Length: 132
Image 1 (tube, rainbow, N blue to C red):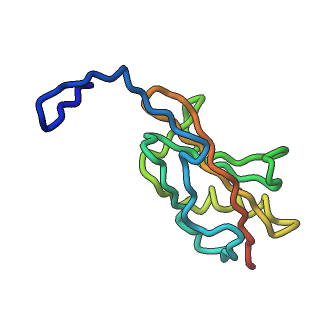
Image 2 (cartoon, rainbow, N blue to C red):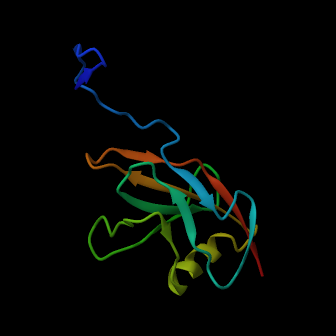
């Protein structure tokens, strides 16, 4: 990259690369600890800071051990990807998430994202409280 100052002197810099930090994905909605009705399913929203494809993960535990529901699912081995920064689960997907919270009423969610080069990033984890 070349910078030219007001007096016409040029300075070359580079190569330049950008690295996304741990906060590459910011969860927006539902808020952490939000009380969510059993129906209809909420629209999950996040800010992906330049990432191009996403998946949502849901779990009974905050560290995502045990059963995890990953959305969206697809027919291919790795499934489909979300290309925007929001996703509303369909009825079938939402029932799977509800089953995760059946005992405690709590479900944890996070967003997995990838950049153009295929490098992956994970958001922090948010908690949902399901209301009957």
